[in-house]
Length: 408
Image 1 (spheres, rainbow, N blue to C red):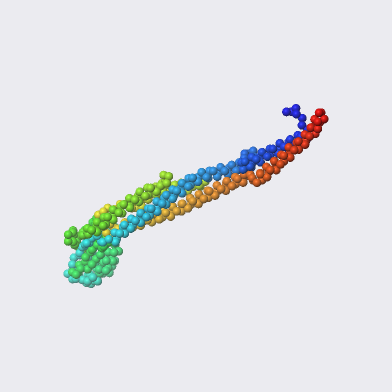
Image 2 (cartoon, rainbow, N blue to C red):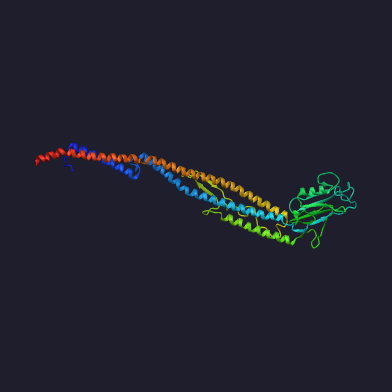
């Protein structure tokens, strides 16, 4: 095309038209894409800065999925804790029913001391230290724990008693589950209290489970109830059937505690059955939260099935179960508090991540997005300029057309 000769005016108008067309193309591209920076060629600094912001927003957005799963893991554990607390409360209620039933024994185990020749009184067992009870010792050996020695004496000293009231106070302090009473012949009768109605009594210094062995210088004689055995309580059959049923109900609850703990999982993670949870909050992996799981099946809570005929026989055994269930309830409440704290942290970080993504994306948009109003105005102006340039080019060609008319 080098053989074509254009006048200076035509060439100037052509260049102006080409420039306008290029600007119009750029403006139309911005309107179509909504961006003023579409590649590194448009603005290298803004393009790569925006790309870095978008990449970080994308990385954090990818972490939101795992954070959301973490929230659900915590929610599942919290749901499990709520159910476990209800089950534990139910178990405690069942144990409490034992305390509301009849004693369970029509006759409790008992033993009597030797009767002195000189009969004392309930307030003065030794008659001022003159009868045979004076200086006599009673040694009570429980199945577990140290033996307790009580001396009947008019001499005031630690471990010495000279009244039924003082004797009972010493028995209560030792937690032996026995009560002393004054017999008409001046002897002392020792009987298991209602709370320990299933307790047996033997003589000697060796005790077995749920038993008190009585020894000392005052030889105690075990009482044999009608239809029973010496030192043994006489069970109430109907009451024991009721208690056995309560044992069965309690064991059903214990089984549900274990299965509920095992079922409180989400996506294969169970914070109530020994699993741990690790959450990452930023793209570098330096901001994390480690949540240690617990094992809150029945064994983990210190609970175990009971045995009919062994447990819930009296108030003492029921109170022992209630103490364990109360301790399990305290464990659950403590874990619920810790879980709630961790859940709050995760939700706060989740909201923070969402807001940070918005900040990053807004920053990227500020660097690359076009002002559509401005670009629309530019497009209109450039279209008008293009029309004017075409007209100017036509005017520039009129002089050459005049020469053509002369040639005709």
